[in-house]
Image (cartoon, rainbow, N blue to C red):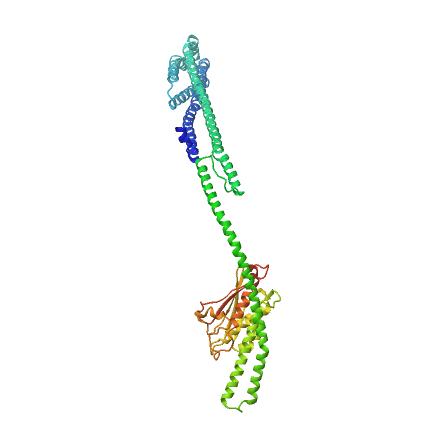
Length: 530
């Protein structure tokens, strides 16, 4: 039952369980290792900082005792105070060494045997000094060297030998302490090595287990799932997708299979829709061809009609003007008025036909696009409109770009725009027309702005419609086709045109033109700025 529950665990759950188990094992080993390391440090401290210094101190103590005994004998023989120097130095060394050993014993765990040995050494030393050394020294000081030498020869070495034996026994016990501490330190070191080996083995086993787990639950199932997906991608949309890996992969396989079913169903709909779209596209293509042919015929008709109307209209206008010159004032005033109406109508009709002919020619007769310097174009336009500009009017521009287009059409464009600005000027206000340009990544945006009477926002779209007038013929001359020609020229060059409604005075018209081929707008802007 527990195995069945484990089989339902997710990959994340299994990896987490493995990591937690390994972590707990390593934590236990770490705790044991920490305790063992502390014990090893204590034992090394016992060897290095207690047993070894005590052993060395014992050797110095033995040397100090021998020096004392030698000094006593030399002083007894000669009676000179200089021969007593080894005794004094040995006595001082003995006291410092005993104090050192006593301090080392107090700094660590209690060692009763060595402590008892040290007490015995102290007792033997006191006995030797009291019963042997000091009596000899007193005799030499009082009675002379002969008395001291007599005491040495008559005396016994038993007390001194007992002192030396006590020191040797303490040294033996210190050696036992050092050997025991060294053996324990070696044992803890071996235990530390065993713990490290165990930790390494646990890590290796965990790594191998993780690799096997990933291979069984991820790598092989993912490879198998990828193979099935490739079969579906190759066109086998009826292939059932499944996985035997972890629960996540099984769920993923079910989701992918659900997506396959949805794609298969939608694909059938797409194929059916594609057939319908292909049919519709074919119909649209036929309609587009028919529309192109119809537009071409209409343009041809407009051109032919306007061209063929020129001759009879020219005759009508000529004869009406002839009647006006020959019979003006010879008939009654009403007849003169009728003749004037006929002349004016013929002339307006002639202007309308000429404008319509110019409109129909845009894009039909082309020499191809070239690089057009708008500074040069504006210079030509200013020259053409100089009579209408007057002495007080101004047409200003600075650093206009070079664009791709047909120079005659662009000249016509600016002539119409600036001509409108001059036509619709405010009374008693000198006209000022400003032409500016700014660029972005794809096109130049060009603005023509004036200080004239302006255009109401409600007529923003109407002004670009052919033959649409916002004022009566008595107020302003013209046929109402100028801005329609401008729009057609702009669109012929692949641009857009619109009326800027945010200005508060005058008229502001924006239009776009394509960049010069091969010159990024950023470089062109640098050239203009230079």
